[in-house]
Image (cartoon, rainbow, N blue to C red; front, side, top):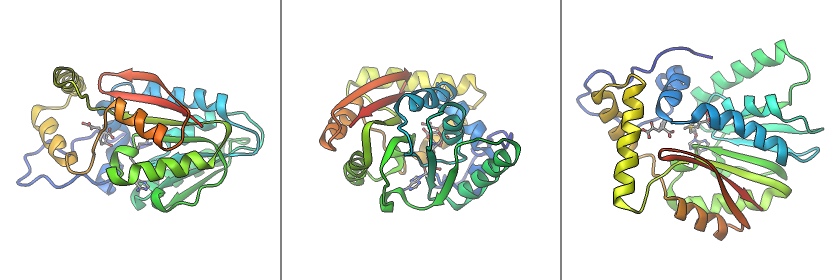
Length: 247
Ligand SMILES: C[S@@+](CC[C@H](N)C(=O)[O-])C[C@H]1O[C@@H](n2cnc3c(N)ncnc32)[C@H](O)[C@@H]1O
Ligand SMILES: O=C(O)C(=O)C[C@]1(C(=O)O)C=C[C@@H](O)C=C1
């Protein structure tokens, strides 16, 4: 795993380009996401623990928007159900290339790991196979808002009885005071992780056009509209949360 520190926004930029999962981001991604998303290591590890409870024999586990495969690796650490395999999907060529390198390295060192297929592709164009676990770990927020319900409906239709969708997202809050407080605390989290005011401000403007968070209420309503029967939040740290949605 690359250990390069994230300094992508450390120098003043004449114009801040829209955030993209390109080669520069790939190089620093493990450091960036750990220092930007409160609770990220806890969410990833426990996503594996949760998945082990929902995995059904001989089924597919999806890691959608897999980046460098952190969730896939947690699934490999925790799921012991017979005949499961992982399908990891990402539309960033740079992410997919590096993800395959990491996973191939693991395959050559350890036997008996869950088989993994890494697909370079758009999750909006994916034909889903019957699945027991679908992970969307900080990916739905990058999907155009008007495409989100259709994607979740297709995921719901692919889910086997006893399975689950695990959805992690940055949240916004309908209550202005709550939103301002948790946004300020997130900035404090980034500062405590060594980001400067300039880095925080430039990253904010880079993501504002490409990443559109919803509120918990919007997530719940959309998941129910997509056909899920129950939505259970299992983790929240500041303005980042993870939900279990049951078919
Ligand atoms: C914040 S990252 C996900 C982090 C990752 N799941 C983890 O836990 O480390 C979002 C990822 O979603 C991918 N992505 C965004 N839109 C996508 C789409 N339409 N199809 C496939 N992947 C997409 C991006 O390329 C990026 O790698
Ligand atoms: O909200 C922010 O400030 C973030 O940096 C969040 C976030 C995310 O949630 O995915 C945005 C882009 C990077 O992938 C890492 C973290």
